[in-house]
Image (tube, rainbow, N blue to C red; front, side):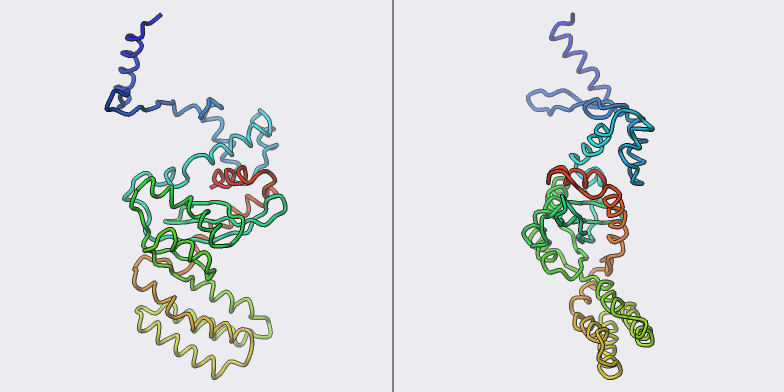
Amino acid sequence: MFSTDSRKNQANKVCVAAGFSLKTEAKPVFTIAPAFVMPYMRGFTADIEKALFLRRFGVPFWGLTYVFGHNDMFWYRTEVSLGHFSVLATTVKEAEKLPQDLLADEKHTWLNGKRRYLAMTVGEGCILGASMAKSASQADLSKAYGVFAQEAKAVKEDYSPCTVNTDGWLATQKAWLSLFPSVLVILCFLHAFLKIRDRATKGLEEWFAPISSKVWDAYKAPTKASFAQRLRRLREWTEKEVPNLPMKSHTLDLCAKREQFIKSYDCEKAHRTSNMVDRLMKFIDRVCFDAQYFHGTENSAEQHVRAIV
């Protein structure tokens, strides 16, 4: 048997070899864990990661059981356990690499047959935050996006993004401003165009083509002045030439939001459309659909969503 002092000396040698030191009066304690074993000794990483990789493609838990053994609940708990880690800190390791230009949006999902909202934050092509909101109110969205804010400030205490691109939902914009008062909220240009496109029935194709061409021509304007001028011309042309159709009112609505769209010219790298977050949302939605959405508790659904991303 080793004496207490002998065990301490042996532990110190291991820590020094790993680049750490044990706690003294002025030093922190580090837990050293082998990378080839999953937390709580759930299994070998090489075996578990292959099954979790297949979950990215919606392979059901019973399929994993058939191929890799164990049982369905083993794989479910293994996946959900990943939700305990910080989504942001797992992706971004260094504070200086935190994205300054973000995108945010909500995706409808279901928990025990009740509608829920999955609030997602995206930056640099990566999902940086995902949390469930009970409703689309400002209070619930602030709480959901607040998880991202907490994780970001754990990486960098004074972190505040420069811009965030959102759709026109006012509660989303207010939620971000409550979390980051200095953030510049950029209205998504694509969402405004989609409202026009959704009203373009087959009988209105002759009008949709010139309208869409003029809308995107305005979007490509290189400066604030030219953007504002092109929207003014679009509004004048629409009022004069386009008949009274639903498409006409939505085109005029787009022109009326000029001041909100024009903010993006103040930040060179700001996202003007929500394409990036929309693409990643499709992946999340497909996984949730294949699993028939969520049927447990609020907490299990939250952890499952975080594990998926």
